[in-house]
Image (tube, rainbow, N blue to C red; front, side):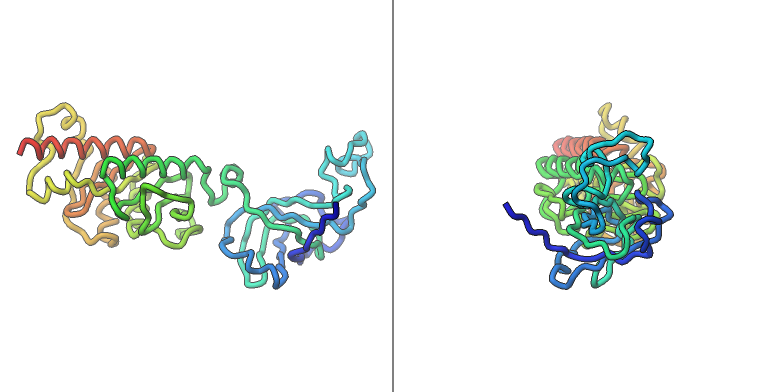
Length: 325
């Protein structure tokens, strides 16, 4: 069988000397540019700054008839078969490099750290898996976080806490926030329906259509250090209750006494506005459950299941109150 490899690009690096270049990537290496040949540049679409990817390269100076080596070139170490080492000398000299994208350019990407020398050809580029990116502390989230939001969103839709495209959900992991996008049907969320915000960089580093209420979510995370998840729903019974000018927390139920210290009601604000975000952020310092007049409910928690459980409980109390009316 004959296999053909098409080189898709070439590395331009300050590293020129094979002997003097490091054997492994180190943090003090200079950035390198991966120039992608014109025929393959469409393949760069949707890569983004900060993403962690694998570069597969063709190590053109390697010895292809070599089957045993001293690991690291250290002759004090017994010979190993090349398949038990990372030696560049091997029958098919394909290099594997885990790098961060520092910058996107029209003809390629700037990456770091990369130990491949100048002139090395590129065979392929592959994004790291979510779990691997998480371990590398990149902007990706482990896939379980996407699954958790999908599950909670579906439950909230089933319970009619969400309908149509309304509502939004987010989780925080270290200095990153994963949030649902605008105009997404919460019963059928997919990976494309999310954006990622970097709290340190103060910018979105993935996704291009975050929920219009993202400022509200960020304000909660900035003001309430215990918050690791936020659920914003539009519960119909709760909205109905307050539109009738009735109160919720005067029910003589044990659940009401449990909820009361954590619940507050805010005045009417324009949805998606900075004023709303600031008011909710300030309220989150003291209250976990926040009702937005003529709008909906916001609940923060240490994890998503807690936010859903409290939202469902509030809606249940509102139903009881309406039945008594």
